[in-house]
Image 1 (tube, one colour):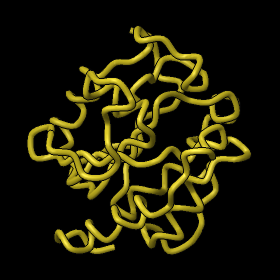
Image 2 (spheres, rainbow, N blue to C red; image 1 turned 90 degrees about the vertical axis):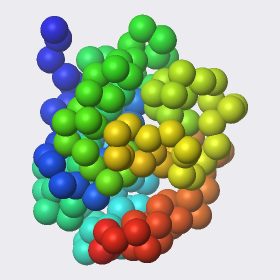
Image 3 (cartoon, one colour; image 1 turned 120 degrees about the horizontal axis):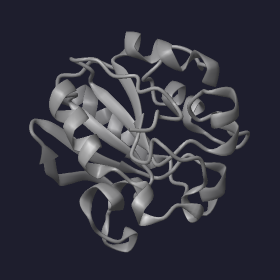
Image 4 (cartoon, rainbow, N blue to C red; image 1 turned 90 degrees about the horizontal axis):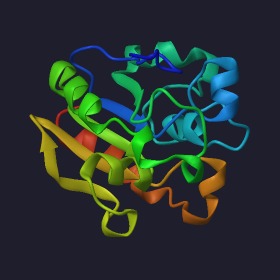
Length: 172
């Protein structure tokens, strides 16, 4: 089995695991999640109160101290969503990881990751809390923080996730 481009940041008891599609070129180059120049991920974690300060991409391993984990659904490839093929995704491996670590929420950073996990097309995947679960893990779909997805950006879904975590026993 090939090695993941970015290492998973997973442990038991996390309140939320963020799952992107694949490492972008910049993230792969520096071996850090969400390192692309236009990516809003680290800003959003701080803005919605999931971290007490804005972390830098190189500090990605520190997220577990805030109850956060990181992974990708296409962990063995480098590329933007538009460049990935169906064969690049490994939804079964993602499901296995979630069953092992059992975070409260798996937050899918973009509809492409959600569609790959759920086996649907992106147009049929709504943002927000999903009816499907992986064991006890709830699924939440968020607008992608990628700079390439700016046309679909809506911060309100990120704020809704933080509010949901607060109201469902996961202090934020």
